[in-house]
Length: 438
Image (cartoon, rainbow, N blue to C red; front, side, top):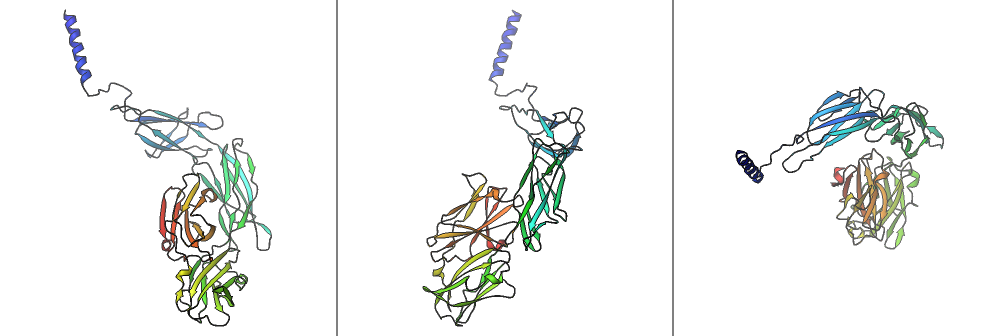
């Protein structure tokens, strides 16, 4: 009987315990922190690497891996844990480990993580030459040019650089084995001219081992034209004897500034003009051959200028003699200009704006964080343009754009008051800027 009553008492106790809403944690595995184990191996053989330094960015502490290539990190909180792993004779690599919540309800349970990290021996050599063609058409080695080797992102650092010799030769002597490396040249100044590398060279791969030599095909530099941007004109203040003046940011080629490149029209007729270049080679002056403009008449001036290294741009403006510029002759600046990541195409940004009633096309100007001035990019009759982000090198971090509408007479809107938009290459967000802020 006593056993019977004891059993009944235990059953009643269990029943009330089941009705209690409090969760009692009796699981030994339930915990709010986890253990991270880093196992370091040789990429080629798969063998464990001992004596490796594993540095935790979160803990600001380094541990030397044991003979099995293991380093153990106990009592680690939820979230991302970053490690930098280094060993003599190997390329330093970065590893990211995530500790995630795996519990349910009120029971925290952080799973332990064992992560294998491969390391790559260094000692692959990549060598080549950088060439450029001078003003006389002669092919030369490019001396003192910076050559970049871009590694996969897990390597620290992931970008290496060397300078070319007097003959234009270069060599990377300690590249990691078994990986592809991109060799490139950015923007360079040679004899006061701007050059850029014509292409990236992808070398290396899984078959290359420490001690192998890769002969990289030559990298040719091509001349990059200066950015030609009109920075001012005086078309709002022309009287009968004034010269029309356009000032540009770049030095202009004297032979290209002549009457065959410039026209001035009044109504449907062209008038005879003379064209000259200022002493600093940056300002074009257009004057009536007769010596006087007609008072109160409306003129349209159009011209094309060339820089000393071949770039060109075209300007168009309408002015009224004694009455300032003709607002009727110019389209209004676009509204709603914005740029963002293209939702339909990876590696593209989408530049868009509202339609202008008096525009037949839109001229697009651009510059990067590497440039001082805006340059003409292209034109479109649409109200959007896709920007190929892959066409820019690794040094380009920020892009800027201006869109100017052009009417059926070929007259472009004023740059003054035009909106500038900025795109950060590492962000999907759009940022707007006024031109004065650039």
